[in-house]
Amino acid sequence: MRFEVSHVLDAIERRLTTEPALARGVLDLAEVVRYVDLDGGRPATLLRLGMVVDALARHLAEEGIQVYCVVDKQLLSDLDQPSSERMVIRRWADDGHVEVVQGSGMRVRELNEIAGLPIISRNLPGLAALPGAGGAVITVRGPVPTAPSDLGRRLMSRRWRCPDPECALFAGMRVAVGQPLPKLRGNPLCPRHDLPLADTGPAPAQDVLAVRVNGVIKQRFLVTGAGPVTVGRAPEGNWDSDSRSIVLGPWLDEGGVKAVSRNHVVVAFDHSGLSVKDVSMNGAWIYPGGDKITPRQPRTLGPAEYIELYPGVEIGRPGSLAAGTGTVGSVLVDAPTMSFRLPPA
Ligand SMILES: [Zn+2]
Image (tube, rainbow, N blue to C red):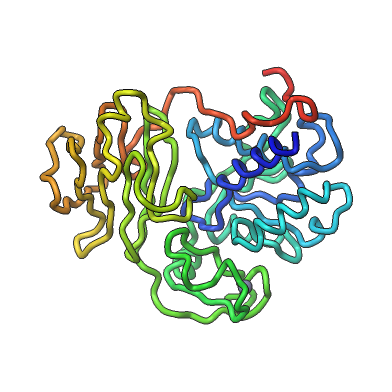
């Protein structure tokens, strides 16, 4: 049972990001874990974060969506929260998956107003998370921001470094996962350590791409000028979301497993913008049009273009890939039914 819970928490961890360009909303973890109405269970549990993530995925008709999770420091000593879960939150904070701050409400508003992230909450304007089928449902309540403010754009166009050597948020080496929005109190500060951040120069150019399989977006990922990203059935490298490769294998059917190469395309930023290079055995095609990409030659990816590796397996900017109509999977599929039961859908 314990193993299964940790399995679910690992799955939830992959849905957390502190890069505003990848996050689809911001939430206050202390509020979500105490949202008893969702399941009528114990006073505080991290599994409710999974319910809200699932609800947002259904709302957006997209899998693998990520949220920017702000954790009030007090939650780390909240005795209603099982100690094993408090340990998990501490680990998430140490690894930079979430932000631990003094006063989460103010920080959530800042990420909303400056980074342009919709707030996912019970009562605030934005995306309302309400009890419903499958645990939670998301309803749009009032205006939802879609882009950072001018100030946010300026802040995020620089790289920042926190003077705390242990800092996971502004370590100056998060090129694969981007960087959080600095906290602004006169000067840019680290939201975790409340120390002034050093400006280390312009941020590398970046863009967000997505993988769509059979009409459903499975994952968004960041491509930065700091280095290429390899996409394929099983690219060499790590399997975690921080690595510079995107693993398609688990989403492929039998035909896809045969047709998609271990390393299939390499996506990079070069002088002309975002480019793709076909390094596969079987080729890749560019749409609209359906032309085969010349193998081993970088090809600039226009704003409305996407590439196909195999019928139904596509990569492009999220805007070039229509939202899916298929059923999106759940982050809670492995939740133990003994201790945690989803309300009937
Ligand atoms: Zn810091």
